[in-house]
Image 1 (tube, rainbow, N blue to C red):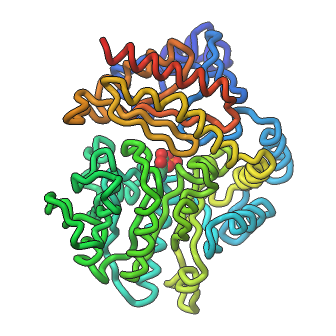
Image 2 (image 1 turned 135 degrees about the vertical axis):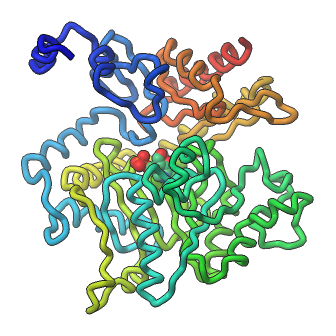
Image 3 (image 1 turned 30 degrees about the vertical axis):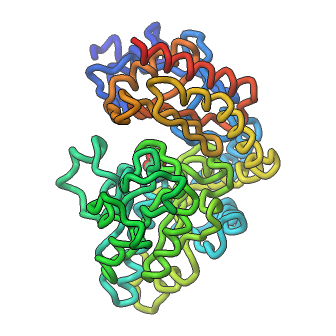
Length: 472
Ligand SMILES: Cc1ncc(COP(=O)(O)O)c(C=O)c1O
């Protein structure tokens, strides 16, 4: 950049667009900066809409990376943030505490599945998972046992820090970092459209859990990778089983039968290992229950929360566990301390927003609203099953998913790097809808304040764009 230009931008006044200025210095996540289209300059948000610097209005169909639930720039949340900023913006959380941090812990314990009573704060979804993995590992070592194995599921996505990446499915997201990652044991997930055992949901009795020997399919190799078989094989070396309950997100928006989730809890109990539920995506109503674990009436030993916890305003990670796990860290021996923390642990602004968001969830009956959205999404998307490029339509709570295939008989599909993804994104944008397909998996999960008419408009655009782009 030359001196004139620097002077120009340092005054914050420029005739260039945000996209042009961005191109000079900014590096975006998950973005091939050489070939990307120019980013959208967003100047304002209100409700389900975002407004661009060139005057367009876009419906935020993915809740700004799955975080927003009450709509953009909500007056109640704006006021909560301003009020807290006037009082206390941040303080070290190692030897200090504050009202929003305490209040949020109390409020979460009230609404979380039974038994989750100890709240540990961090910064984002990946760190919430990282904390859970470290907590589980040290829990065993504080009890005098070394347990090295974590079991995670195929198609999992748990975040981008090293532990969270290790726990995630090997994919385009993790391969460049292979050398940094630790090994985990993987078990089959209940991806019913592509059943690992080659069974059908109507008659399978969730055999993919692997705990009913006579249900073994002809796919003997997959059978050996079922959760029950992996637990059997790795025995007392297993520290914990980590799952995304009911909805595996970035790995393909895979919706589970609730029986599988119940089975995970049952198997963890039977083998005496911890169950960690990563509810970073599913928490706070997204699946039509306040927490996805409620679909199966189970309580994990550790739960990971983030994204919508602050209503989508500020980053906050929360890892909550039981009194018995917490007790393993209490000792006169200081080496048993949980040595983990971040500069912004328990940030008061984020905690105050999270409390205000919980109030809004209660006052607006948000979970019931998500159940309504589920019926609107079903109505709009279900007819797409007959389309020649649509393999499956899945709807869970406020998430509507359309999995595209190249061939309906073989179910072949291009995966995350399928060029259909960017082509669809652009076509959605052209009609005023901001969506970001995961390659061949198109999905929408709008803020809960979306109306019936807006949902009908959104699903109509999805149907139209899918038809136009796939028939090219
Ligand atoms: C289930 C799940 N866990 C963890 C993460 C990581 O969260 P973050 O992006 O805030 O680090 C994500 C992000 O999409 C997620 O979907």
